[in-house]
Length: 232
Image 1: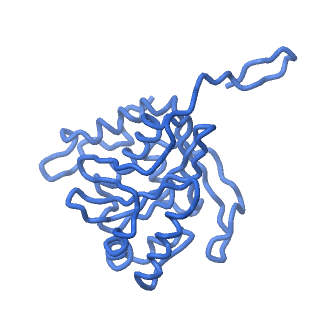
Image 2 (image 1 turned 180 degrees about the horizontal axis):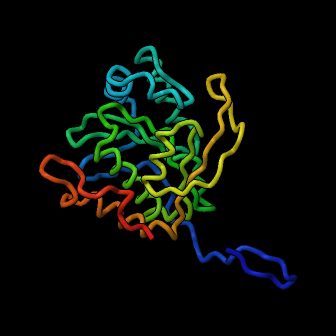
């Protein structure tokens, strides 16, 4: 969107927006999962789920992993927790078993932007209601509490599963940054996706309709797919 200034030049529309509270570690609770700040006490459970209990292929497109032992994985967790402008979250099932990690990162509070990344889903979490609800809870916190204007998702352009997940969750593909980084000695082109605050209310409604218990039959199978629910 743009307007024209006094010199006849196109300029961006005025922004009537002020930053909300900072994005800080927080507990997010849903029906099928709970997210809480990643800590040392999660390491053993997450190692069991993400390393011992999942195929090493879940780490192919990640900058680190797979991990040879719990000590190496603990170093990975420590680096996530120590990185500035990053809020790593442990994803737990309702019984408290940790099954994944997702992280708020590249938080730019002054401009109202944040990204969800470093997403590590164990085999036990993949393709479950909890997997989707975890992403909904994080997006809802970013938009409805922190008040971000833009929420990003980036992935290796060759990671078909991540690209498909971004589209299913309502992120819009914005382009590919060629030769963006070197990961594990290989070139990585990075695909960019985002949701804006203007799009979020419609996406929130779709998430809430999909997560409604009435959308699942007695066997827990979805009646309507998230991507088929109205978003526009």
